Length: 99
DNA sequence: GGAGTGACTTTTT
DNA sequence: GAAAAAGCCACTC
Image (tube, rainbow, N blue to C red; front, side, top):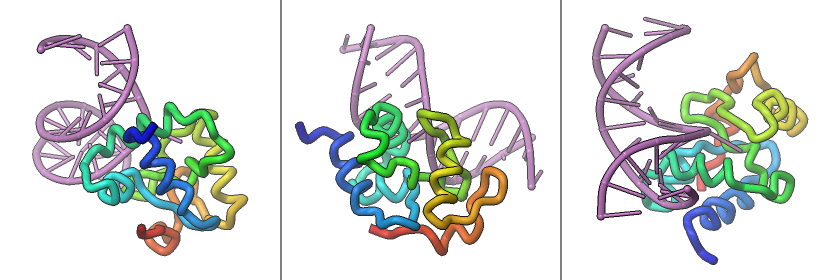
C-alpha cells in the first residue's frame, strides 16, 4: 500500500548514516504539515532496524521519543557518530539532513 | 461520521 | 530558559 506511513519510510531510508532529520522536515518533504502524523508513523513502524527511525528527532534538536525508549535511541545515534548532550543533539543543524 | 490519540511545533506564560 | 497551552494532521475505534 502507499499510505502516508510508507512515504515517511521511503524518506527515512534516504537518510545516510551519521545524519538526522526532523518530523517537520519529513512532513515538509511530503508537502503537508502532518508533523503529528509522521510521529504516529514512526510509532507504528515495526521495522525498527530496517527503517532508521532513530535518525528522526524533534525540530529543536531534542531526541524525541522511541519505541524502545529514548535512551536506546540516544545510544543508537551516538553509535553513528552523532554527539548528544543529555537529551539534546550537539551541532544539531550540522547533522541535519535535507531532502 | 464524530471523538480520541500521539515518537510534534510554535507561541505564550 | 523551562513549562503550559493552543494548534494541526493522519489514523483508529
